[in-house]
Length: 295
Ligand SMILES: C[S@@+](CC[C@H](N)C(=O)[O-])C[C@H]1O[C@@H](n2cnc3c(N)ncnc32)[C@H](O)[C@@H]1O
Picture 1 (tube, helix red, strand yellow):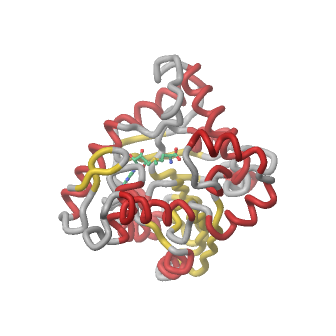
Picture 2: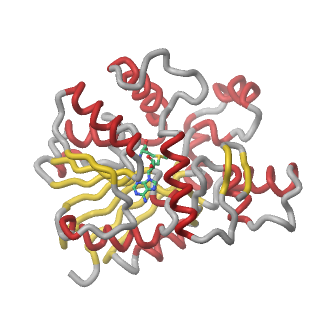
């Protein structure tokens, strides 16, 4: 096991079962929140906590995800009313809420009990309907077969020990005209390059750590795979009739500088210029794959 910026990290030779146990332990101990810099001053099960988390996340995401309604560049709200929708890796449940408010019949799974408690609490506080349970998306689930019109997964699949098995399961869980959409981490990104340089040059990992290990040491979670747009699309096409990818990222990624300097300089960078860079070198590789093959 290696150690990195956010605690223990996977090394290349670890057996995948061990990796998945440690993935789960990591996310149980560090449930997905958006308060890592300034803690939200209320308990996680209170309305105020969810409101403040969502405000922070959506303010940041407005740059890359939103035209009019939160995340409408990626979530086709109008087409999802009355549809069966599965979210893999619900975290604290914000995307599940957006989907439920659009009229989707929501099912959500997550590797951890912590994420399921948060999402169930969110739905109870807001009077929304959905079913959520702890499940590892790598595991087959016959009741899901051909059950969903749309499967959504934002920032999750790359954190699993067998990402490819999840994509195969999604193929099995979608209806013939179903769509799979979401985001995985992008390898040809400024963030990824910075992680490798930091590990290889600043921390002396060169010649000791593979590129993957260098990336794992700089990422959130116990591990994360990073894909080039070409590799991820090619991989999706093994399971789906069509697949599109798009690169984007958070505006602050254009300035790989220490936080204080970055915050001072960022307002001087125009959105257009930042988008121009992030459309190629952002850290998010978003995708939409349609028509599971062979159905
Ligand atoms: C980075 S968080 C993202 C959460 C949420 N999608 C968001 O954008 O806020 C990753 C989440 O994926 C979950 N996860 C990781 N591997 C998983 C798997 N194999 N099956 C289900 N959930 C998984 C983790 O427990 C964690 O809650």
